[in-house]
Image (cartoon, rainbow, N blue to C red; front, side):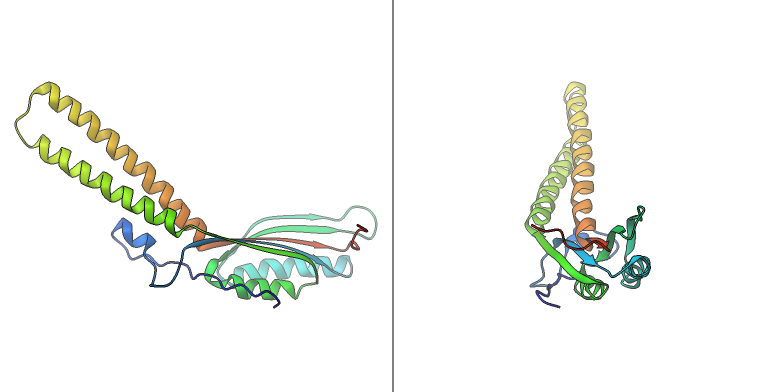
Length: 193
């Protein structure tokens, strides 16, 4: 397809360490992929067929249909708007197949590198975990009740921060694993500019 996209493969995570969720093979980058496509089809029957086929394409690549809005107002024109989620490693093939469903009216592909953001979050998490270990070690020593109370409060705050930051980092990784493909299918002729 013209302007073919080189998609970064989805990272694979081994069970266990939180760092594993963000580890990629050398030379690969974690990125969010978003594609917007507008395709014209010949008639309402073709609109229905192309809508079903777009959903099948997403599923055939291990993705899913996040939303579908199919509208056939009175008359000869109709539209279908789909939001598809496709594994980032398969977005190039999915876009090529989707492009064959009609005449491309417009297409835009956005790639946002998130690898540095994920790396920074992982480094911050490692720093926070070291701080937790220092406090845990200090709590094993004889200390005053007031100091123990302060350290336990600080420890709980750090643990909550680790949970929140881990959730945020992991959400970034999950979003990068599944590309968003927004497809609009229409029977309408291109509007005069």
